[in-house]
Image (cartoon, rainbow, N blue to C red; front, side, top):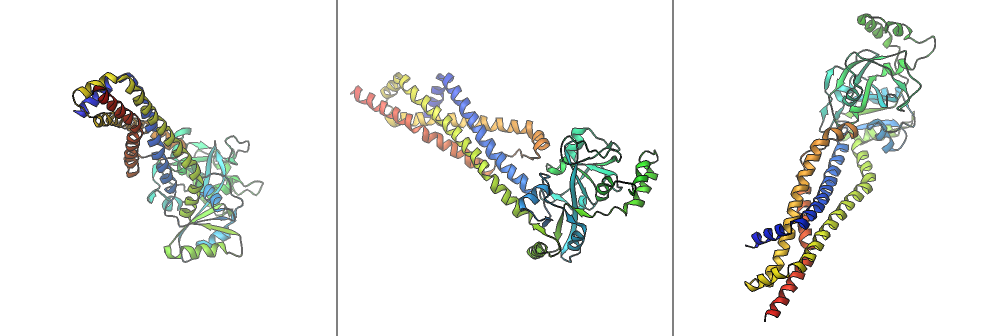
Length: 427
């Protein structure tokens, strides 16, 4: 009877109730959305690179090294010599080593110079390997492999030609126009910065920066104009041996044993020949997230305040309705309803409003994630899961329901007192 009466009472005041539900639905949507995206973003950051035990670069801060080597944000303070890479890579504790060279771009997308082993060893998420949507890894000097978003946004297909630019600006006047690259592969989407990166060989990076008459690629430039691709590939193979890089930006290491991680890191950091910095990606990612923690907590606090304000609005609406329900209270008292009945009735009305708002807010959030999932992956490299019913989210929903009931205590007590007064006046 109490539930049926509460539903009928809400229906009789549907205009004000609908407005209250809309306000609370928006607050639920914001709170659940911020909480879900907050956790998914943290997980996405942590899954940007996996299977890499150590990242090595020039002496700088650990966060700067992480940002430019993994997230392609910012620039290196200095390069490191190829001899240092070979020295570390020859360590018996090293399972594999992958060098990377940065500094060039194409229409705002960063260019990564590396070796073919990069596509075999680099992992993201829970050790997911890079897969090819089309084509294959580069094998010639002027081959390029595109990240998924690069190909999608710029409309490139296999065998298309493109020109790299010096520097990382979106608009550059220093183009390597005489040395175009050929698209030989497009990677499958990963939801990481890999999607926004062009991958070329280290020899390709060296070739586009050669100048003067001694350029070993002078014949290759002429060959790029020929129609016989096989002849061009043969020339590429012949001169590739002359293009061993003198320096690189950084390199990634995987070790044979996790037990040796700290020893190898210490040996690299204490190298006497060149100032190097070796970082553990997991620890550096944790430090990065701690810096972002202030913004994260602020957004969550704002969401909580939005929900509390909506709950107080519902409480004010219920409190105002008490004065309009004098006749209803009198009738309930006449048929023998105790004051506690009125208290529970108003509490139940507030709970129903909160439950409807939570259901609507959750449904809108699911719909929004479904519509924006590809956009978030494309523009922010965020893989946001559709599964919002995590233990944290469920606990948050329960907390919101309890908060709504607590906020409704004020109008409930007011209804209880009104009922007691009517009981005394009847006597």
